[in-house]
Image 1 (cartoon, helix red, strand yellow):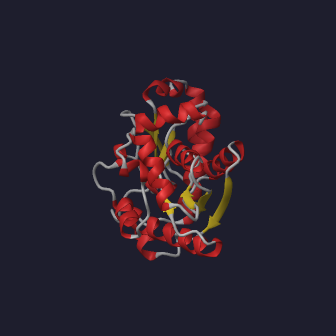
Image 2 (cartoon, helix red, strand yellow):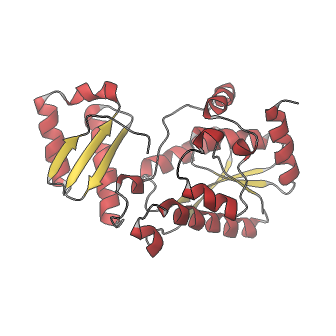
Length: 257
């Protein structure tokens, strides 16, 4: 029995009453939901909050519709949690705790106790406070359980017709540790990134918020799109109108954080 079949057997055993899959609409969670659906009933649930870009929420809803997944969106406030707002290096721990609490509350309402999430074996590097919360809360990570790497999941996704898009992170990751997370900063970051996608035609962009300075990251092959005075002036004007005093381009390019 190959490991995908062993994963399915695990899902079947744990999900006799059905499973909730924490659903972002990305490759990992979408593929997991579709694989699980082959053997048990699946409810895909997206937890929406102040740090989730509207673009990502829209994508999750569209992906769920495309694959005819039962899909629900839960709304929570992370900014009501002072431990999260404080933005120390364990920020993701408090975020994940709150998200799992919402998933469990929803599960109790629909009579489903088993919760799966899409962390994969390639993710388990460095400081992972969010995954510590997953373990503490007894949420299952089938991709990790059976050692599936990102590359292996992408291969399965392609067979299932799941679109392969760049990984995304929440808006809070654009604010340096130790600086408070506020709704004003989050909305400014989101709007800035929307503008850059429209003006430059780039898919991957991050605007790191350093108070009065916006530090823009794009992939290195997109950097030349800035090498035009009209483009630079337009970007600077728009981002300054959103509240930044300085607008900079990070010459090392995008980092996946």
